[in-house]
Image (cartoon, rainbow, N blue to C red; front, side, top):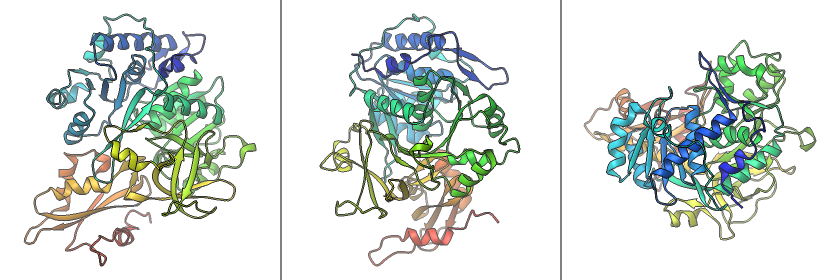
Length: 511
């Protein structure tokens, strides 16, 4: 049996291959049929195979969102290679690390970035660098056009590697989470059943493609259900609201819901055909949860997942399975084990807070080329330690109350303070720094950097921000920088970040 993830997705395409699979929201819309997807992914897969790449080769992709970028992902799966999505905001220092660590045989980037990405790739030993742009231009499609539109999906085992997703670590260096064909497919099938996907469903796709949420949860849910997607290259609240009457499912991070609530066109009438609104990637404020329900008549389904596992828990879709509780992430999905343990490894009673550990067919195969780290993150009985802290109540609802390791989630993206501190501490005149996350009405959380100068030097907060913007992704750059004489510490010399958070807690509060 072929466990290739693409083959499973294609097996669920509708019988009418000439019906529309994806419709863009461009000024002049583009329409892609299911046959178009099949043919284009075949041509791209044949191109990749013509390169005579070693088995298990990685294909690293940093391009703007487009339907062709989605087809490239599907083609990599189809050809049996390993897909490596990279955030479009990443700068040279970050790309240099990812390419050096993953050792990809192929890199695909935007033409505008080719001048700086290709030297990094070639220096690291990458043999092929292609370009792909939003307007269908670039060397990738030009080369693929010469290949056959027929292709038999490569035979894969369920534990063969399909994707590597880089997730930041507390040491400041990212770890590559290895996801297999079986990991991703098991989660897609579970979500299809649990969220009640049905014939005629239409998804509004407004998320990035380099993230679990947009790539696996959104796009693959539609593909494995044979459902049409209304495609936004970038999120725009007006465009989403205008298309709600033609759709049934929407997925977004909390920031998107906040921005849609600012649109006067968001009414119960506009949402009358909608079946499901899903939120994840960051905590959904209870105010947003309640305002959305009052405004639209729909209760958002909040869920919880991570790069290493895809989706783990979800509030119920069906009323008979329970109510959708704001402030919680619902129940563990069918087939997913979830337990809460204290620091000694003992189970926490219902309602008590501890470290969340999970198991199941969706849990990743380990970290790329980091066997010691992989062993460290799994218990002796095979459960993955998520690093999140939470509780499970007596009815089974899971609530995430915090994150060990100081993770900041800003606009749905993970930001690790240690990484940012590393870049700040390298700057001339900086003695040390501390980065913390504080509540933000739009992004959920925002980073704040507190920086100590070396004796006799002067630091400019705006200059620090500007320097960071040239080195790291914009979503990681702190929203504010404060220069102080010293950082608060405990008796052991550890920086008291809780004290810093309290000092800056109301920095972005409204009113």
